[in-house]
Image (cartoon, rainbow over all chains, first blue to last red):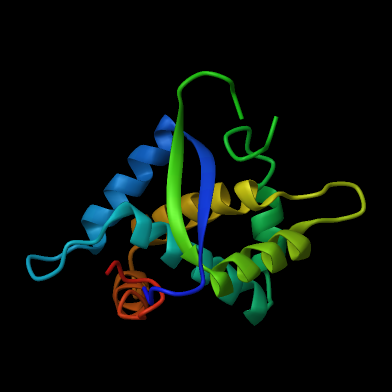
Length: 74
Length: 74
């Protein structure tokens, strides 16, 4: 990532979500390129914004997922 | 999110990604329910894992996005 204009993001996640991150990083890695959990988070942020921009059913699908206890804030 | 079994995640993101997070949180919010940027990140983590599990073209699409300078680690 380019050095300038960066922000530090802090998020509390569940142990299951941490495990999902590790699994996703492993699945996207190859013998030529290891993917970090940070890269997965940045990728996930870009993807969700892209999906919503594309429209269609995404918004309703995401709103439904937001009702999951593991995603909601307290 | 349930109180137990939590982890603190720290990720450096670009200003553009921070703006995408804010925009996504706004788009998923409604007059009845405000969505935080943390909720968007947790949602995005769940979604990317789900997509990869479903298989199909997702893996290659994600690998291509990973080549973006704004996603890569230094």
